[in-house]
Image 1 (cartoon, each protein chain N blue to C red):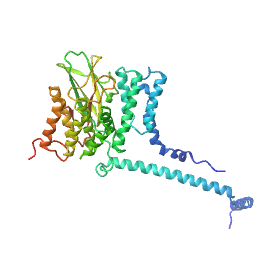
Image 2 (image 1 turned 180 degrees about the vertical axis):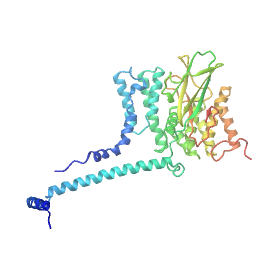
Image 3 (image 1 turned 180 degrees about the horizontal axis):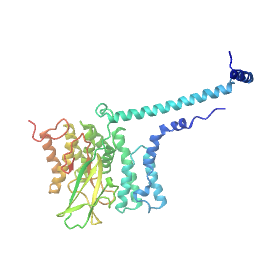
Image 4 (image 1 turned 45 degrees about the vertical axis):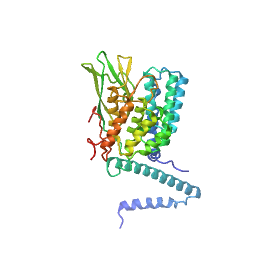
Length: 176
Length: 219
């Protein structure tokens, strides 16, 4: 049994159905376009998947020290405080310059105590070349450190090597 | 007619390029940051060509940039800075041939410094090959450079260090050697004498499995 409302709706729907056409079969060009789009989408998803998987693997290797340490070195970013010292009793100012401060003479001014100039600088593992600038003009190498290779700019340099944490340091000037 | 992929998927295509973009940003630090702002354009261009060539060879750039900064703060002429930077890049290339592709930047720069101080590739290769503890390479290269700079003949310094390396000296032992030689020399001892004495002492005491020198002579 149909209600009044059904009676009003039914003819309208039937009319609408009559105007509907059956779905058209896609032609070859459309099929090729759709397949191409799907393939590109798959490739994109594959690249995205590979990228994400690589990133995840890298994170896992970095946060799991020990398990894969032998195959992939874990970046050692633990800084150690290195104390630089030089005797310059007559100096008015001494600056420490080196690879660790991009040779900026204003970056690391040293402080004096009874003619001995001192500064503690945190350094991550690596090899650093450095020197002291006394009173803004006299370049001095560190007498207690190794010499750098033949000086390229007619001024002496010293070298400090900060071992990774896993390797003990023997230098007394390194405070952990 | 094909529909364009959604924007989100198009962006995902660029993800693999992200690390490359980061590298490019790291390498594209303006040269002016190294104090070359007063250089003539052709000088800057020549320096940039050296750096670009190093990037193309997958060499680390930071040591070259440090060298530029060092040259500038020391008042070197741009021409000299370019020569020195090119020389360092060449030494790093040579060092890489010896160390292989697995070397760290620290190892590479240390080996390059040894080459620049006059150590031949063959000597460096032999020294590297004599190491029982691979992680000692940086310290042994720095030690050899130091000895060379102090006037110890390369063959003599390298021979002593190889002897220590074959006996099991590691990074701590070579570092100790460097420190003690610096002290000996500053107290007036000749570097050749200092290195021989210290090496004999270490060899008589022996080395721990980690490559440190035993505190007292081994039984």
